[in-house]
Amino acid sequence: MKKVFFYVIAIIAITITACNNTGNKNEPVKHDMDTMKDSTSHAMATDEKDVKTVAITFSGVDTKAAAGINKIVDHYLQIKNTLVNDNGAEAANAAKALEEALRKMDKSLLTAEQKKLYDAIEDGLKEDAEHIGNNGDKITHQREHFSSLSKEVYELVKAFGAGRIIYHDHCPMYDENKGAMWLSELKDVKNPYYGAEMLTCGTVEEVIK
Image 1 (cartoon, rainbow, N blue to C red):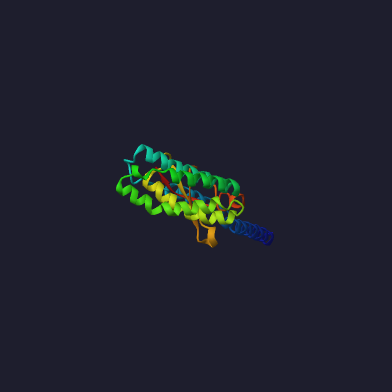
Image 2: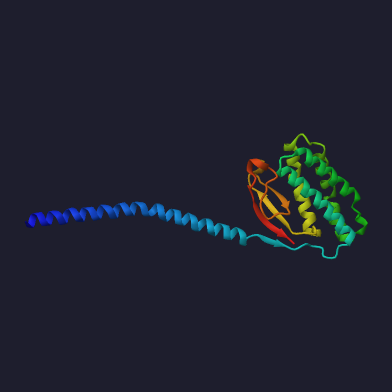
């Protein structure tokens, strides 16, 4: 009888041990999922927290000059939005409107310091707008020039503002993972370098107010 009793106890002990071991095997998977969730939440919070706010350089810009610069930015944003929509023909039209805005910009309204900064990027703005405007059937070429145009408009907006909040976004994959920036009036990421292929690829780096 004692042998039977000890035999039953032994079986129960083995069963309990086996269950515990099975539970231990599953725990790391659950723990890993929890860690991933925590890490994702932390990353999202960090990304939100790490968005830098940039104040514009010149606060006393002539009203008419500021309106001219805002027009330039408006047409840049139109180019961006048409590239987001994979529409090279409309991007070309927006670029031609940008060229016209650049021609109408009255630089005589700028102070010497303001004019010096504007002059430093004006030729680049004109060249990139011309390439985008003349290549409505070559969206890859347009996007190459949009990359350099974005850098120039970024300098313009940092200096003069844009009459609105502007977001500086970054795509890490464009140009063989060298990355490229762009400006947007939207907080949500809409990628102009890949359009529908990878619409939300990118991060918000700065907000310019």
